[in-house]
Image (cartoon, helix red, strand yellow):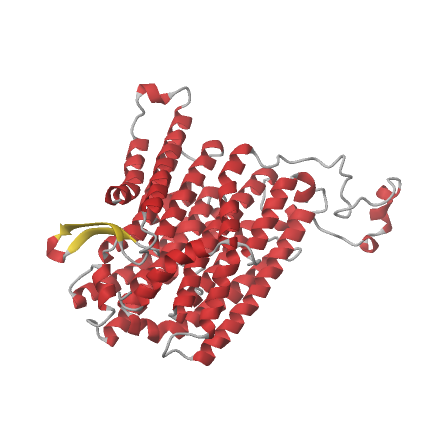
Length: 545
């Protein structure tokens, strides 16, 4: 188990180095570019298999206990250790990261985004995977910071070199926001380490803030929380996200939404809740307020983009939806209750599955149409997905209703549990204030349903223009054709509507696991909650089971 966890963290990094080296003559094949893409699939596949074996070998009867631990002294002068371990909180995120990265590598093998050398692309994806996996596995604050920062450069280059329009500006905005947040976060980490005498996260969590004064905890939560809030992202520190998603290639958007955003919320749960509980209690009402503002703001932004004539970009709309969904995660954390925190962790995983699938689908639609502009996709020119690529349209509708929180799918449980947690927050927090936040969050779920259903209606069914609104000249060309065909007004009959390529085999291979897990998590939430709940209970109790 120790070897497996170390392998999971280090193997992608070694694979990235190997990807940049010249391929041995026997492995070059006829197409060196395809050879390096196969290398990416092989490495990420091996990491996924190792993570699955690690999950099977995990003691599910003791999910609150750190398992597969490695603890080696690295910098004795600062008491910095190479300390790795997993529990019921980190294991699902580890598995999600390995799965999404493998699916992205598989998708890229068949659909590599336009850009420079495939070698660089594969190496960057593998470095990104290593940094993300390390973030969820390390148990030393300084190592956590290094892993947290390790993902920034790969994502910057994926956006800047393989992205679409305005990619340079979006990449710079991403790196500047996250680096500035990280500088402040490092100061908070150093403050905790110097005042407590250790950077060991397990020891600090067990101490439960007893070795830190309230003022130190408040300063640490403010500093570390700002850095984590940028990465989450929390309103109003979110403005880098829509630009980054809009410009990023498909796999970049999937990894950004599916795993990178989870690093921020994981830091709140793993570091701030157990290590600085008094500081968190001070800032919890403000965190919850920002969270619910983000829920409503993200939904209103999506509604504005979805309306007819707004020229809204579908990728940008999904990016703004992430601001709202991550608001639910932050609201659950702010309640400081087992119910709320479990809901936040469940919503984390559900968002990774559903939004990862949505970005895959939007990327495929953009490849087929050449645009993600909603007005173009919904135009009355036979563009409706149900008529041109029915399986693609059906899967988009499925992902959209999963995102809006339909009961029976993964998106439902996280939102419901966070709202329940807000109804009865932890002792010392204002119950009237949190019930107000709960009501605002519940209103946000209605807004989410509204914009998602508008997207499904417009993109999958096409724009509907009432016959009476057309002028006689507009109606004349159709007079000889008999009755108006069903579907979008003005559309050509189905027999002459040009078809699009429907879901291809490689797309089905990359998307089916996400759809299946969305259904599984929705119908059987106990699988995930059985892992997280004991670990959360122990975390909030100060290391006591």
